Amino acid sequence: MSSRQTIPWPILFWLLFAFVPIALFFFPVQVCVDRAFVDEATGSRKGHLEWFFGANSGGWYKESLVETFMRTNRPAMLQQRWTSYAGTGRDVFGRRISFGHGRLGEVLFLRPETINEYCEWAADSEERRLYDILSAGDQEAIRELSAQIYEALFNQTSELNSPANGSQPFRSETNRTSSAAGSRR
Image 1 (cartoon, rainbow, N blue to C red):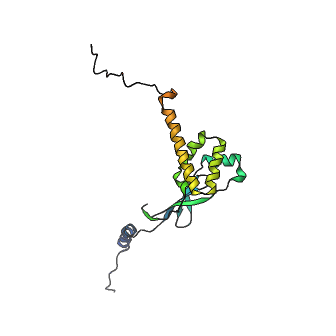
Image 2 (cartoon, helix red, strand yellow; image 1 turned 90 degrees about the horizontal axis):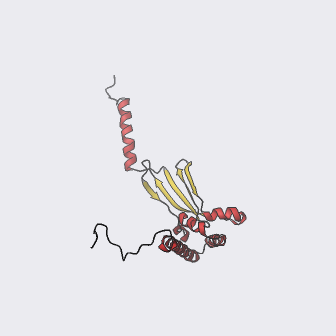
Image 3 (cartoon, helix red, strand yellow; image 1 turned 135 degrees about the horizontal axis):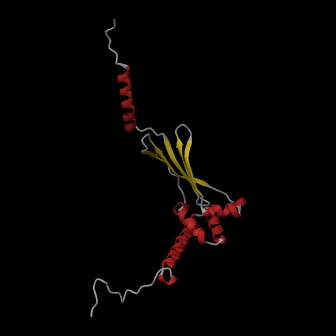
């Protein structure tokens, strides 16, 4: 007979079952990376979740109206230049544990919604000009164009919300009295 005692298998199993999550919590292991890219020529964005075993999931794509315009009107001229702008590593619990973000130019400050809003009312020549400037990669020209786009959108919004366009009633604040104040007779 052996005098050595052994740990019963069920107890050993439950100890390991409890230890592994605790160890993963205190010593994080990267299991996936959130990847995101921007097309510096059109402002379109795409991304996916990249797993440690090589598979990708959760792919998404936001096509800008500049890309739509170029695909429709000048497909041969469309040259995309995808640049990584996000690479956040996550552990088993979804916590961020690593960061790997690329260095982008001024196109990152032009949100896809802003580009699309501008392209909705811009002439075709303006959309083509936007593509030409973005695809050239001249950061100073992109910065100037970005300022022009934001200014044009601001001016358009101001015009739409002004009382002079008839969309809102014009009220003079000089002759208004509160109904709670009652009559002054």
